Length: 434
Image 1 (cartoon, rainbow, N blue to C red):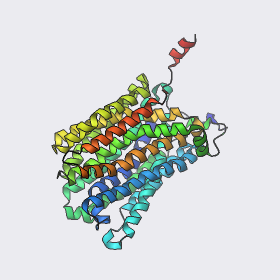
Image 2 (cartoon, rainbow, N blue to C red; image 1 turned 45 degrees about the horizontal axis):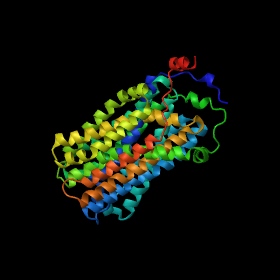
Image 3 (cartoon, rainbow, N blue to C red; image 1 turned 135 degrees about the vertical axis):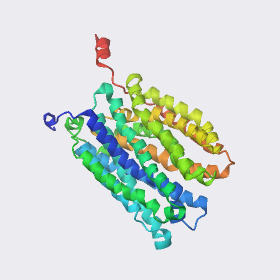
Image 4 (cartoon, rainbow, N blue to C red; image 1 turned 90 degrees about the horizontal axis):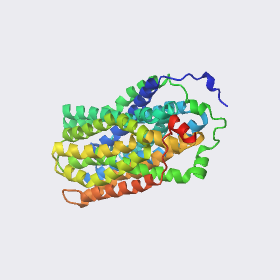
């Protein structure tokens, strides 16, 4: 058994801030690729394709990152369940940051031919592998330090990280597109956000150097020998349900941030600056609401909010695509905002909900695998499916709205089959047993 007496309780605010910064940096790496795929990677790496086919091919390499994320959750989940949550944070940050910088150095198709998209594919895979471990390590380290009655609130800070990372990634791209000509952006400007990942990775390593190991992990007497085997044997149903439940969140987020960006610029003729500004504004609101909704989850429970978020998503998807098709900035923003509010109603509490569903000895693997399998179903497929459906429709892509509505209803059914996990307050528990 590990000696827990040597561990001092850290400042929750410092721990939460370090986790937030780390997830922000890693998701910056992941999102900057998605933005580049929507705006520029198609013609640079797939120039022999038609514009739509080039976008689909770029989204295909984008999807590879999601395919790698469950593998990363298995690899880093094994480390987290066997050796601790803290080593996961360092290893995943190094892998994701290094592969992101390398993307910015890959020559285009005109220079090295078919090797260019192949290298892009490999680096995107490594990026996804690292991010697959990041979420589990950051969330568990925070959740397992937090007091049970405020676990939702403190665990939500790593969940703010993706919004910060998205705004950073798109803010850099927005600044470049606003100051560079199209030729300059295509020649070298698109590489700058990838190179910046190296600086952010160094910052992230410095922030995480002072973190201590999770006290809950140190209490485990016999860590699982092969965590994945135990998860598959004892928790396979739970993994499938959590993956299905989280699918809608990924579908919503990437429909707004990736597919809509490509659709608005290519089909509707909206400028990159306007599209990025509308999307970023909605994501900023989503990030600001995350701790508030998580605090509500500590009071009302995790499952009710997840069910409400799914229902809201199902009702909002058709209005969202109708508002997008107007190409009016304010109306597009309102469409995106409604989707992000539905998203945050679910995902603000997920960082507390998933760890509470799994026993501590396999928690890093089980929670991360379920979370990242949902990413494959929702994040990898949505830009590809939505682009295909939109190409077959008219100006208003009703098929995309119907697809997203179906995904929301599917996830609603999965959440309905999951139990509530919010810890019972000590006072209420004592009264119930008196």
